Amino acid sequence: MGSRILTARKQAAELGRIRTGYSRPNPRNPKGRPIPVRSATFLLSSHSQQYVERAAELYGGEVEQWTPQGQSVAQWRVITEARELRAILPAGDPLSQSYELWTGGGCARRCDGVTEQISRRPCLCRAEYGEDWHLQNEVEQGSVCKTTSRIGVMLPDMPDLGVWRLETHSHYAADVMAGGVDTVLQATEGKSMMPVRMWIEQRNVMRPSGPKHFPVVMLVPSIPALRHALSGPLSTAAALNPSVLVDRPALEAGPAERPDYLAEARECTTAAAVIQVWHRARAAGHGSDELLADLKQIAEDVEAGVDPRTGVVDDDQDDEPGPDADGAYPAEVVDDGDDEPPTAYPDAAAWPDVAQPGNAR
Image 1: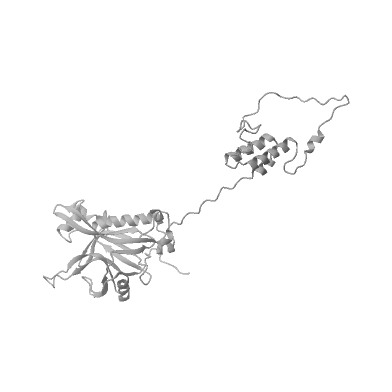
Image 2: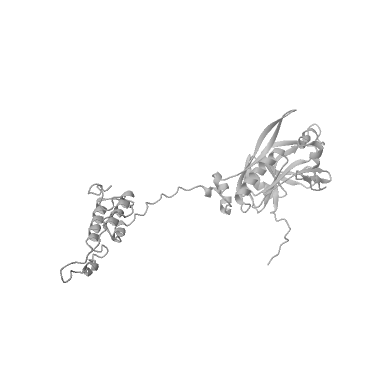
């Protein structure tokens, strides 16, 4: 039996990165800082040339060797033609967010909005610049932390098992991305994968200095109907092929099973009970001349002392006491009072007028 380190983080291998921008040389100063460019399509980069070539086959674009800014190891990238990516969120919480400040020596600050994790002090940016501290980056780059969101997704048509990491520093994209992921987690409880659709949406906001344009990565569950995303964990097959979730036409309900009214009537011991069977059949829309005739015959048999189940005459009639030596029968007291409780059908003692041939319904 294998064993695990209980405190270790369990995460899939990172195969590459998904990016929303790139940099180009500064034509005025080729040796100076490159100019950042927002892309209308996704970029994919990796240390593996094979992965990037496959991405170019799937999403278009030209494969090129490229060295990320501030690094010395060359990688491969492709500026794709894809404005949208279909991906799969792995089980668990794939989103990591924090406020970070990076310098030449690495990460100087990492904050959750309340506590700066490295110094263990309250949020330093808020203490210095107030609630709108994030606007300071628009005035002076590198003076405050950047909103940093990282999410790992699987690209189902790419080779090998692992995740592609998307990183964005958009303060506004952080809320949108967190909302989409939290919707998925609420539905699946983090117990299953979820197919998602990702695209780059250009937005703008007014500032005192004028309009500011920025890209937002949208991430929403990619399912045929909203209820599929909110109905609990999905199977792996549904995550890989959401089309299996399309509702199929419901089978038409079969006709309700018709009660056996004749069998019920044959269990009755009085004609009035047989008439009640007729009332139920007619109320259910099952009345017919044939059923009426059969029930009347059963009622007559019951009154005549014939067992409607067997056709045998009731033997109890032969046990009635005969006249005594003087020819007199034993007296029987008859109560003429009407003390019977009301029935569901007041006229149950007699067939209703409608119970005539031709009026069964």
